[in-house]
Amino acid sequence: MLRRKILSIFIVALFAVFSTVSCDKKDSKKKDSSAGKAKYVFLFIGDGVGMPQITAAEVYKGAIASSSTIKPTLLNMTQLPAQGFATTYSSNSYITDSAAAGTAIATGKKTESGVISMGEDKTTSYKTIAEMAKDAGMKVGIVSSVSIDHATPATFYSHQKSGNDYEEIGQQLLDSNFDYFAGGGFRVNKYSGYNKTADNTTALMTQLETDAKAKGYTFA
Image (tube, rainbow, N blue to C red; front, top):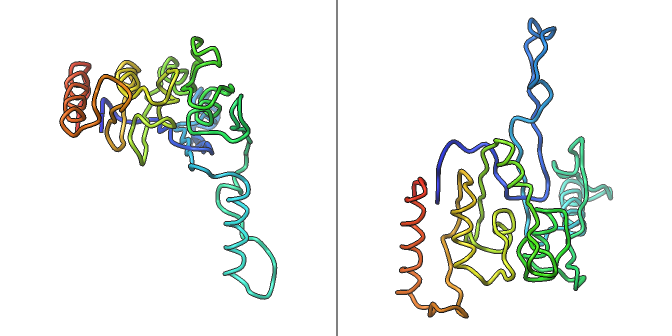
């Protein structure tokens, strides 16, 4: 886990939840530039979750709520006042993978399977919504239930021709200057110069930890 400052934004999902800032009645007449703006933005990504899975969950909830009527019970996320949809198929396949799907969500652009936030030419980098938020002065955090250099979280801070480029992804994580990272550590690419052994994995993680501290991160 890497922590720099207080986290303002988590990037981890498919649905964005915006909380608005309210004003006291006595101050309602004053001009407040923050009124009505989001204070925090949460993006949650459910791996493999699409409309069929959401509908199945609602049908199941409805079934266990009543055995006599056929009425799905809506999930909280399908009752949000503002909703949107994004397609996540790869540019070279209808069956996507984590890299292309994450790129679609993070950048709004299509790419080939296996590519991390870059174009099909594998040279053009696509700017991510997390990078835009950081450039706008917001604090940004990335949280994952798997390794932090996995393709899905990596699409928000990294730009690589292959999601297997774990060493390069790890370095770009540190170069992103984001404020917080949490996940299941770093991995070693078995096709790189590192042999996928416990000793070399430890060596890589030790180097990344050293680099993280040098950049001002607290490493836990």
